[in-house]
Image (cartoon, rainbow, N blue to C red; front, top):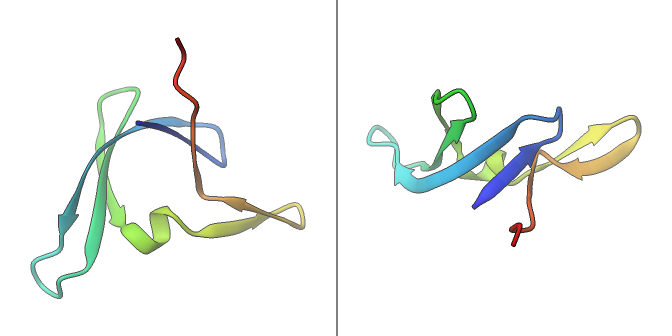
Length: 65
């Protein structure tokens, strides 16, 4: 699955993981340049305010094809 960050970047969802220290659910995802990132699942899926409008931090992109 591909997601677009509200600032424009495109990221590929890789998998969910669990942070060992406190069992926080995490999302592991990869940027177009190959960099792998990890973020708490709740933060990955949260809404943020941009120019007075609430939008998803990462929006699921429709599959092409």
